[in-house]
Amino acid sequence: MSTTIAIVGAGRLGRVLGRSLHRADWKIGAVVARSDSSARSAVRTIGAGFPLAGISSRILHANIVLIATPDDAISKVAAKLARISTDEWRGKVVLHTSGALDDSVLVPLARRGAFTGAIHPLQTFSERSSPPLEGIVFASQGDPRAQRAARRIVRAVGGVPVALRRDAKPAYHAAGTLASPFVLAVVECAMRILMDCNFSGRRAKMALLPLVRQTLSNFERFGAKESWTGPISRGDFATVARHRAALAKWPAEVQDAYAALARLSARLLAANPEETLLHLDRVFANTVDANE
Ligand SMILES: NC(=O)c1ccc[n+]([C@@H]2O[C@H](COP(=O)([O-])OP(=O)(O)OC[C@H]3O[C@@H](n4cnc5c(N)ncnc54)[C@H](OP(=O)(O)O)[C@@H]3O)[C@@H](O)[C@H]2O)c1
Picture 1 (cartoon, helix red, strand yellow):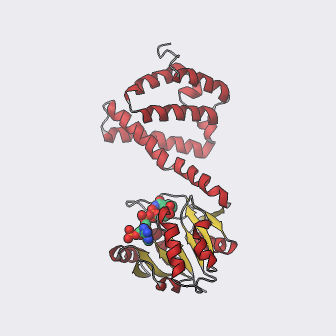
Picture 2: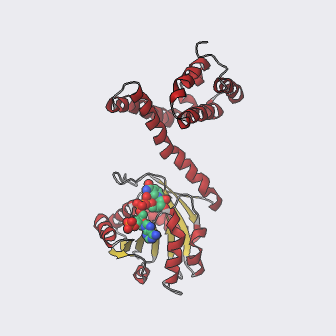
Picture 3: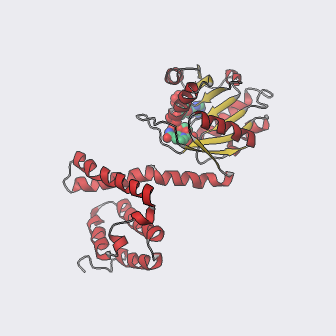
């Protein structure tokens, strides 16, 4: 039996999931955004479904409802959805797509008899890029029947389902945040420092991308410890002191991030973390001469 899925919050992720499910022959029901124009544009992108501006009982035509609104709107949306019917939620599955939140945010729908859970792809979807879902890990959490539906969705779009405990969700999402937006901030910081050394933006990108890509490729092939290079790995603490001195004119966030990342490298990658951290303490307490 084919399943109809409604998408409440058809933004970046909602559209990608809707389009992939449509291509996998799933039936798409209501495609909901706040404005009519956004809902219509989402239907065009997905290639199926009917547009709805705001919550209405037409959402109940579906047997699975995916809430892909921003995290902060999910609990309000769940409360609004619960108000559209007292008995028609029984047996339906409702999943939200937040990485950090768990199924408890959907409690008004669970009280109506829906099976609730969460499904979250560990991937980044921006206005400009919607990468393929094949091979992407999706974390699922929630009621066993909701998780079964989540696994069906994930397999239909070619992803890899991983079940998470409820209490693991914030830490799981923190890991994803370190690996994507924070990596972006670190690379952008390196870009700006190179540009301050007279690189054009184009040259700075050209210089950094092979370095970042090779680092990730080494990580993939050999693991983090085997791939670790740089002054801290060699014990060149005077060089680290030169870096600290060179960054002194940059905003505190840049200096603090450099120091925090140096310490993180020592903690996670050094053969002798405690000894390496002691050396770094001296560097950042400004007691190592950069010309030593
Ligand atoms: N983008 C990612 O890389 C990514 C990755 C994994 C998971 N997620 C998760 O996916 C969810 C959505 O993220 P997104 O980046 O796709 O967001 P988005 O592009 O901003 O889209 C949000 C959608 O929700 C609608 N919406 C906003 N507030 C609403 C409200 N109060 N009631 C009803 N609909 C509302 C918006 O309607 P309008 O179009 O009319 O404004 C829009 O269609 C979040 O839970 C996020 O954590 C995102």
